[in-house]
Length: 288
Image (cartoon, rainbow, N blue to C red; front, side, top):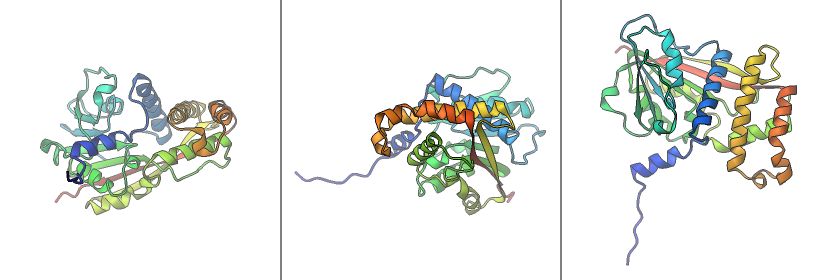
């Protein structure tokens, strides 16, 4: 009997990419992401940096990896009532939906590496995506961006929001904060993906490319105790999930040291300020 080598099917590739989303899809994760959303919005001073005219009629907005659609339902308040929103996610059925009859909102099941629906081509005035690109390998990112940029209509905008996992902004490092940094860098495919997005959008032929670094504060943040608390809550949840899928010996730690990390992290957040760097990157598709 002869053997043959088989190439992974498209479905197998989609499944493999889907497994890279390292956080659970659940009610609790939906609540964590809503808290994260408010944290980011507060630190960034808003949701949209791209200079899209939000007073125009019949605007179309696409939100990639939308989960429960919280970003759409929040940002819809900044658009005219006739604006239409589409969100897509690889597993939208695993997130509890948000009921908001005042928003024209449709959710589709779609993966970032699959071919997008033909009716999305050159349709949207704004395409938004947040916290996904670092999960993809370097060689996969151009195809992901090609899919997203293909949805932008001529003259329209794309806005990408990504964490720079390679940046260590806060001045004082502690054992628990160091461990969170180490864990996140071990999970993502490209910790520096956020710093490459401007160049990648230029390679897609986009113009008016801008990048703005935003500091997300967590813990003992004198400038905003509310944002500091939101950040602490978000990062503690992320740390606890990472701990549930990793083992202490992977990082040279004893079981006792591992088990004490959440308590130490909580204490660190009371005593220190943690700062993470996020990049907002936006660009325009040429009119011609």
